[in-house]
Length: 514
Image (tube, rainbow, N blue to C red; front, side, top):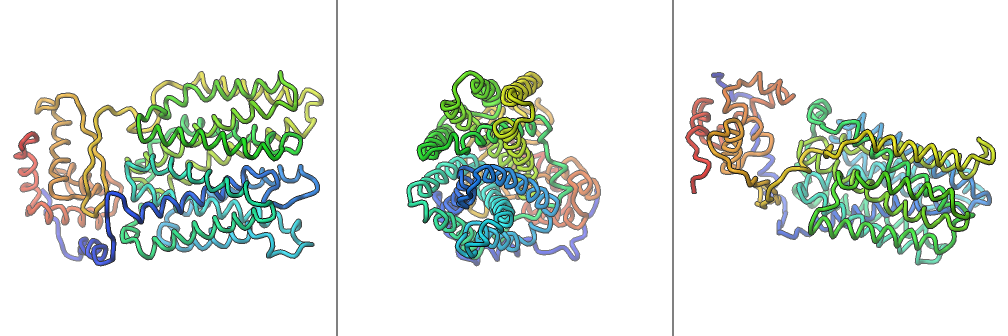
């Protein structure tokens, strides 16, 4: 067995002491977390107010076709921003304030048109478009990290709540006089950034936001190309039908309210399902959404132009299911596998933004160009529908995200920092004959009793098998210093003095003892 030197090992309890010293009143209903959910909802309202508005950023251009091109440019900027955030995730984990400042500045530039002289308003639209994409992507990444870190297994309910609130706030943009809509969007930006800054200064657990190395996070990333392809396909359908709905020919004052109404119904359904039955899972949506979306898009071939908004509205509403499901599953994956939230979320949104870009581009080709002459629209619709059918035939019915198909009952407990944690209690009989599984459950029980962190629990599993610090360092993709620090903390919390003592503790523990 390897003796672990405790020299130069930092006191890992110092961070916890600092956390306790800062005011943080934790209740089952935590006002700080409620404020976070509300703040995040204003961020997504900002996004929807850009995406669903025919006059892009309320520019009132004479040529409405330019608005659609600006929507396409917006999707391209989203993709580029998420790519940069993903590549620089380590930097942004250490400098979240910098990302917040970027979001605030870009948000004000994009959403506040009156700061520009009248003769410059059209000229600066490309700048405002770029700032809109950068601001939305930056702020959304910060909020999703907040949710994943602090809400753990409740993250699905939290995001469903955010979507409901975001469409409620977006209704305010539609109901006010058109002259004041830009100021409502400015309020979204200011409130969302302000709430995040307030929580950063006053919410104690914000001090413990993790900084997970890129290589360590990527080593635990289990999302494959198949769910990423599903995300792309859902966004393609969303962008394609949105292009038609935002055209001057199809758009009327009622269209915005219909979009709002359909969207609100869908997200309320998702929230109710998240709180009650959790029937609308990623695997369930995958069985339905490609055929349904294909049917809606195919219907565009057989109905008059003035009625095309009906299947497009249905398709957009249904596309919110895979859109939301992809975010739910990404966040749950981040929580379960302890990934870097900034890195994993920006990576997943790369696929959504490239799908939106492709969909809007296909909409432009289908509805605003004559690339194939008079048969351009039928050709594009057939291509998209055939692509959907081809993708649906290559996918299995098994969930592509870890944890969704686990069976058992979830029980709640309060963690050492006051956080609400959920654990899965499996119903099948577990006994010493189960070998490896029984050993892992004993390690987990020891970890709960002595208040070990998730990372320390991983180290405990390996220590109890007799693994040394070098092996643990390599297996968990952490530094030698970090491995020894975790080992030291485990010994301290369990009041053991060597690896052999720890192994004896685990071996002697009876899993079913009262």
